[in-house]
Length: 102
Image (tube, rainbow, N blue to C red; front, top):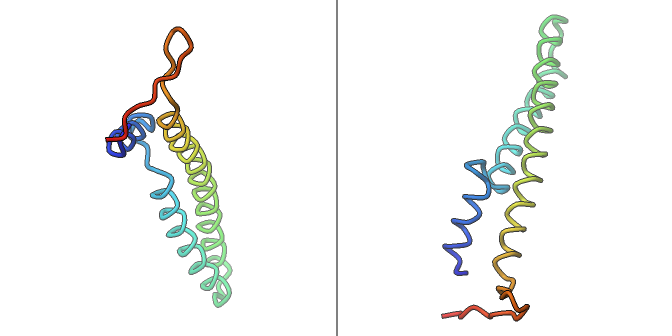
């Protein structure tokens, strides 16, 4: 299977879900937001505002965890498709057929 076909097979297997690399970028963005909130929390003196920041940080933590799980699943699917594409095709008689690498 050629690279464009493998990429298409991955997209089909993911059923529209983002790829692991995209999810990694999303996680990084949320971590940066969380770090900014953590800095804000350190300098905030108002108790109500501090609680609001902590609530937002907890929401980001939950989102980061969910995206990390999705990233692991997407990575697994992507690797499974790539490995499957590399295997020789088996005939009914058990012989393997090597695909041409044109």
